[in-house]
Image 1 (cartoon, one colour):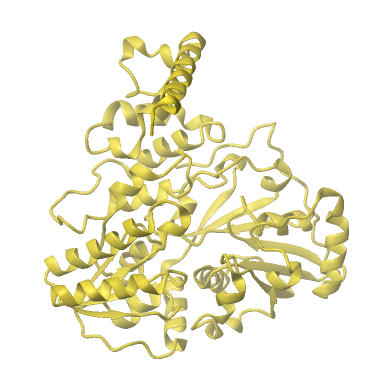
Image 2 (cartoon, rainbow, N blue to C red):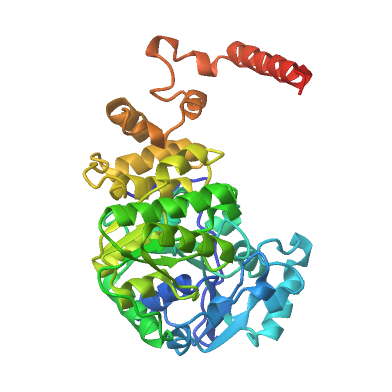
Length: 465
């Protein structure tokens, strides 16, 4: 997909230009080891401009950072440390505030920039920032603290293929020079930040694979498991309020049963680092009942490291990015399960997890039936339709592409990627019969529908318990 041209209403902000006699310092923000690996690969591939000094700024975004190791404490991080001239802590910088909840007040920005220049010994250096997830804190806060710094955004997963989750201040968005991303879906152009005409650059897969190999070599010994094992990936979806804890436990059991049905008697379960320990115990009980040999890897090691070290015969998950990296960088077969439930549950439709779930569902075969064909249409067209339905105000130029896709490809197999109510609200094909297409936009019809819903709510409240 081509970049959307920048309009007169989207001028490129003039960031402070580099002066030859002034040192240049790059601040690279990372909140995960996977993101740090992506930064290391981008550096190795020469995708970032030269700098006199590079500082890795680590942010621990866990709900309780004090009890959860940050990326700089993860197994294998030491293999990446030498690429940076220093490692800083964002949590320590803004303590006692949480990185996900703090941003500077506009009037305090000059004070914060002056403070950080003193604290981090930046002096009068030209500052450039490389960060992830620009739409939210801590990345957004860091970009606000240095208002003159040019920005590079890197993507550490499938979410970059989706549209920007909310409208960015043009004073932020127009400072972004490029989007660096892994080619997890070969040839697919991310939608992230396209509204600002940002250039998308691919981090070479072979370079990223070498970085993962370095991390794997530096990771402490992992449990010994036989070749031919199946690797199950947990994601802790209940923490995102997508599933209930009971539903997520059943999802793990579904993974186990599906792997056993495919003939794998030895199974490795990689739970999410912050998931409750009782989930592993319940899975162990189920494995014992079914006669399976289950190994639980409770190390915070990357799932990609497990793929490289254990070489599983099958990788099973819901919509983890590791499912795509298993095939793209390790040549391992990967299958998905539970995506049908998540596509139904994700709310609102604009939920930023929708694109990762959609891509995994469309591109990987299901665990339960390997004969089920994957999405046969063009993935770029599907992404354009879903992306427009998610953020029509941010990507209005995708409407024609969405209409074409829905007109041609909307059927029983692809309906799960859309919601009739959403299509109706946007007046897109598939919402209502063509002869009634004017209704969703009719203010009288909308007003009557609101009244009917209000009456229903009142009646429901009056019903006896």
